[in-house]
Image (cartoon, rainbow, N blue to C red; front, side, top):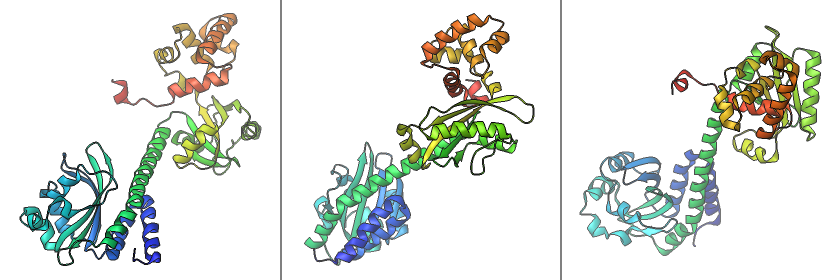
Length: 379
């Protein structure tokens, strides 16, 4: 190809930068247009069946003509021919229809003629069901079709354009997942905090932030409480988790009324690191779950029974025990004997795959963590 290697490298850099920053696509298209002596280019995602353009990035083409295309001419000889073309194949417009035939169409009169466009290099970059992302490089009728070097350049760029568009879709998906994941976390009734390897707070959900405002927690950089003794115990559990241990559970008094909260501390497993990294939380190492036992009372017993196949009696014991109560306290609250509580707990542990109350509390917390709004309650 008779093109400057520096110019091609710059175009390649732009193509891959555009995967993460969509605003760069017009610059990519303009740069390719300059290399191929084209009027301009456009990259778009559309459905011909729905006659809808979902996105478009315009590199130096006429915006008014683009609007006319979307309003009246999505069904045209070029787009109809491209519907069955494989992804990554360069198609020259003369293969679809000759310039003479094209010039008899309303599409040419209203979209192409005002821009003096007569030829096009077209390429599907991604396709799924009725959706296609496509690349067009538009050339004037005066200059004629693309010459062999220009065709070769477009064909050489094809796999890079396809990869960048596909990568961009994935990045957009990850960003959407990140937003959705954090929205869900902020709906949790319990506090959630994620710490890094230096025990610094990376993320705290809405419930945890409210606890900090109420004076239950400190979340500025490191996590702690306003009680030196409880802070020391919490720091020890975090240290154990950071060293790869199981973490543990502790109780923490709420300043306003002295009611005990349960704090679960757990190391983040390697399989979860990728998920958190994808969601924008880097170097996550420890997860804190701050549970208000009062919230457990609102969990329907049927929900716990269905989740783990528990009997009604076992679900009552599981719910009471998950609040951090001792066997004796659970027995007193349910008006049962300690031996009956122990029997039920053994069955609960077996059915839920847990071995101690802290693990059981985590499972019950997962069931009751999402607040049910009034609309949900009415379902």
